Image (cartoon, rainbow, N blue to C red; front, top):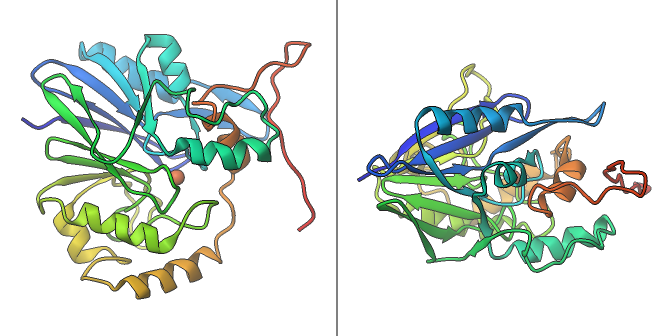
Length: 286
Ligand SMILES: [Fe+2]
């Protein structure tokens, strides 16, 4: 049996949120939900996440988990919002602790224990969870971040920010704890899956020459055509390309707001004594 997959695309952050469900039982998981954030005014909104929850309700699904593929640097996670709204469990890679140990000190986030306890279930390579009559399998696929997981459910692989669509390539590997060679090796694990495996990516950024957002491809298409790793591209060649390209990339617009929320499982920092909530902006001379 293979899962049903419905994708919600957020054009503000180019993020694909996937709602995956077991057709036999209706048990479902939401992968990488977005908490909307308008940085100029500091305005949060749950519009995107609530649209996914409405689909869960409309289809009579039973939400079992929010699955995070990693601690995102380009959007805030709605994981905590969905947990508080539904009682679902929040799942992420067990190496999230490594990510927290880097970023909690960056924000002097003394309220953030760096052991992953903000999440309900921590999964590593080879772990599994039931999704109704289906099974969620885990590939640890670091490189973009140390904690990146890909989730395998039936014939579908949810690869987060490892591979993107074949005509766009791969994710950057220059964040703290990221590594191009590690990313290449993680991608080989994905490319070793059965060729017909459906691949659902975490973002689509519209490469030159394409105007419609896409988020679903196959292992066969990635292996043959991915512009960074397809056609049996060599490890050394990939590393040189990836590192050169990463040197040209600016930080994501939302990296500072996103990380301080996402290392808290999508929760906001504690309120100040006056009841207001602030995000921090660490400043340094370049
Ligand atoms: Fe990411």
